[in-house]
Length: 374
Image 1 (cartoon, one colour):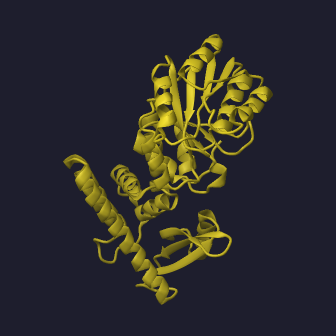
Image 2 (cartoon, one colour):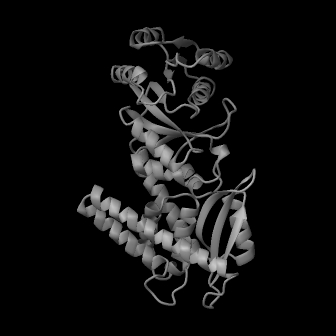
């Protein structure tokens, strides 16, 4: 087996170099971000089975390969320990089965077994940012569906993996709810105001619906003025509400509107100054629901903490923003599987109203696996 490390500005650049250097049968062993100099880089460790035993490009690469494999196993062991404390027997059994599948996948149990097609599927999933436990489940589903003949073809297994991901997304989309009054909630800097302007433009210009816009964001300096600029351009009325009473008045003014979009401040849900007011307004608004707006540029851990902070909000779906500033989107799949809710739209730029894409299972799947979508 030949193992080499690559440094590139993006995972796609690294994958292109790996394919050119080691060929299409190469698999990714690990990937991580490194900071050396002004330009952030990706360090990717890849391997190719050439029929020989540990023919490496250097002792450092051998050490890196063994270290990466050890880290992978230790992380999965830790995940198993965490689940044993937090989940029931059924979930723990499922994880054990998943670990067993992964060990079979990467050839640990069978001496002389090299990285096969299913291992390539698993490695590609994790290279795209899909969490290891989720990648194990996908790989296990793929293996259970594949016939013996299909199990020898990476291309067939990869197509099956895409189908598994899309099917998982379809399960969430069954819970989609259409609301006349939609609140956009989320942390500061997630892009709520710009996304709201895009949604207002879509309803007003493309769907020919009457739209009213309300902002509850009286905390940020000039926040209402920013939204008013957008509202004037789109030609929709804007109301400013500082509390539950003034919000009810705004709803009365917009009683004849097809759609009412509500901007909220990007304060933490731990901020009692506003969280109580927002919960009160949401719970007392008939026909109202919320979208949780998340930026994909944030770390997986930050996104999970954000979701925890907004657990008290009754949100129906999620909006992912700033995908034009990121290159791997596995976190979207991780989050959607974690919350069990669909994505509403995906924002891929700052332009209003064009940089907004309707989310559906096929588009999200394509985005997650690094393929182009329309």
